[in-house]
Image 1 (cartoon, one colour):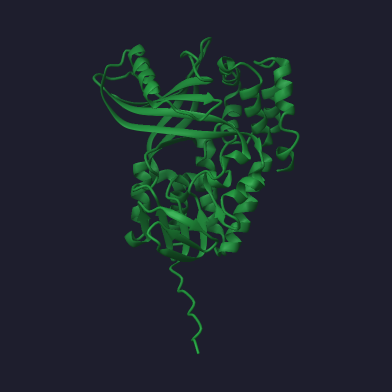
Image 2 (cartoon, rainbow, N blue to C red; image 1 turned 30 degrees about the horizontal axis):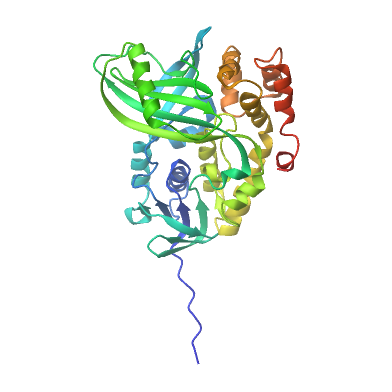
Length: 398
């Protein structure tokens, strides 16, 4: 006669799979607001957050969100510049940058060392467990999967892709504040602009960015363009430090429910895996902060409760952002690729508060009307086709 199998002992209260921005912020928020909770964080990169610079405006976060990320901020500037072929402008908004090294240090200080398992790949997940690449299994009351994108073929996408290099210069660069968008450069592979963050008198992070139809990133060619841009600014480069690459989805439409299920049936999700990113810009930091605080406030963190609450949260965000997906369709489909810059040229001539609300995905009805008012910077028929393009099929059902 066989004795009944013993139930496996739970290893932790909450298991976070994915130690990037979304997973790291969830761990930080729980350490601050729920210090008695036993949290385990697993990620395949040796460093929490990988190798990234994330930037945001003051208006992107509420007070609680600002408090959460305050220790992570490495650089802060009052105001930023934009440049286009026909005009340039300085805007007054406060701009911040976070370097991934600070996220790594903050999470390691907040969690016990044995609860952080970096450099480990997760093979499978369920609502309450994960199997790692060495065959070991971690059991939890609840699990959140924040490993990044799942099946992006479920979504109708363009791409924002970039290569960034931190340049150490032989002499001061002379920048007083960031250049968030320099579109005076030659237009290549869609809408191209250069982004510059002055990290110090002789250090500047230069990112060459493209709103492109495809995700392929030619790192070598873009590196050569960064060198040419630096030379054009009169900067003599002594060395290159941090190098960052990225390919962000820009959502024009798609099947949200199909995308959610593709990331794991019944599994709670956060970050890009949950479809939580700005549809027009691809940026995910404001959503990652808001989701981390939402989780920290939840009274019940078991697998089913987490799944239902985070699914409802992500679905509500997706449904509320149809306007931004429509703008993305206009950007990618209403005109020629090398004319895409004209939409941002027009956008940056508008009221500063409208610009801030747009980046925070909090545009008012008046903002939305203003963005579409007047003669569009693309063909009228192209704009009509782009606006109508998401009103049928999966986008309408999402």
